[in-house]
Image 1 (cartoon, one colour):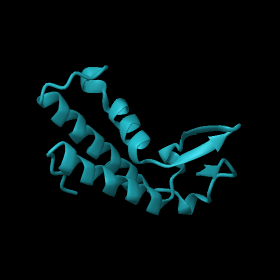
Image 2: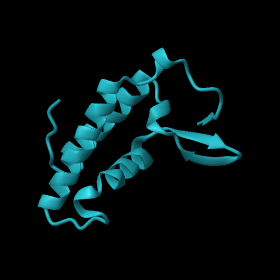
Image 3: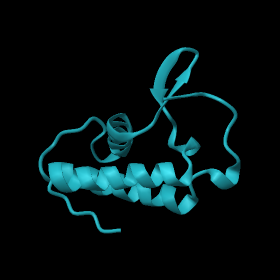
Image 4: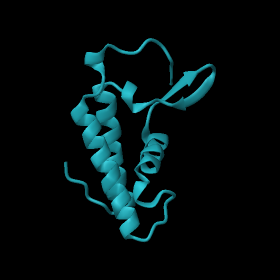
Length: 102
């Protein structure tokens, strides 16, 4: 776990392409769940719930004011987001029987 500090240099942060891919993956998971009858708050707008679930399950944590929170993905470095995406894809394949091709 890390403690909140200054933001990393912009060049170290996840790329826009990584961010877009992350959202495509969350949308695919959402659509798969909805197609299989899973009821989610927000229905088709439930991508934020899928993102929060994946971040809670696989994401990084940080401490702010002595409280542990999920680290915002906007603060992830490129390798950190790559790790998150890899874990989410593996989880989708094993637990949801959803093959996500990137």
